[in-house]
Length: 76
Image (tube, rainbow, N blue to C red; front, side):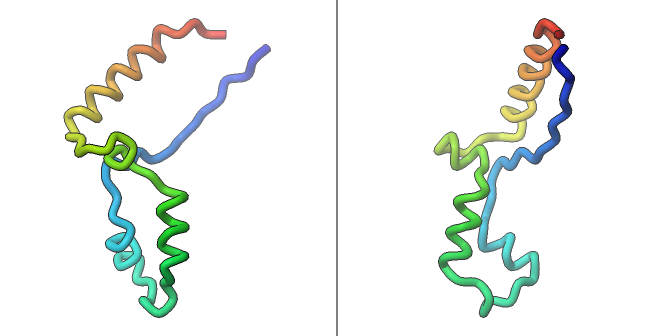
């Protein structure tokens, strides 16, 4: 018998690494290019993946479609 699972995450539409690090109040001295590159390698957003801007309306519509697909999946 397959067990159901629950997944929760964050969907980033756009992301600015430098603004994030400033808002976290990390001292500039502690930030190195390598650390910024590591963040960029570990985080992504829709804008980067699609290579274009995406409106919140597009995101909402895509999530509504995803919801419909999930509801129509055969449950095990």
